[in-house]
Image (cartoon, rainbow, N blue to C red; front, top):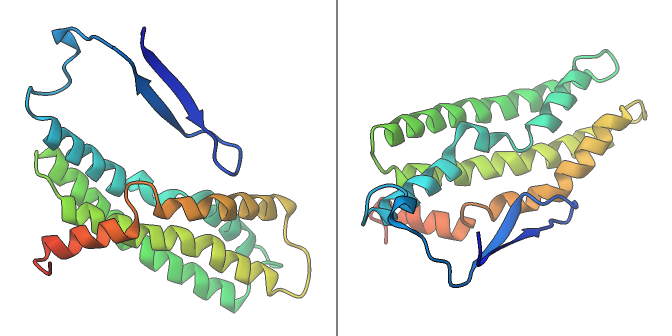
Length: 186
């Protein structure tokens, strides 16, 4: 549309998942209204709740976790330490996913679970960033070098992008402030 400029934002891994969008003298007709007139704030907070807590949101590191699990299931990859680590990660992912689904249900009922979404995002980010760090510790503590190259490549990629997980959808400071306010602590 005339007056709209879109510029990709390239991250350190070379991918462009987000863009800057500039509007210069853009005129829209009444048929361009999204949602209800005057309901923009509710729309934005609902979208942020979806972004912060969608079930898929928790799985930014899941490709690495799945690949590592496949390796851990092989005779050369199976160790007691790896099995304990798999249990630790799974025991954190399962309740987070259940919380995420519960938030999605609230959103479909028209509720605004701002605090709950912030909590899931904050806890979920911790798990998403734990996965590459813990898997790196596991893989690099092994004496032998029979770790598949594809697994190491995936680990390298996820390790590069994992720091960004705590920025999207609100930084931890913002999220924890929202949680504290929602709990009446500030």
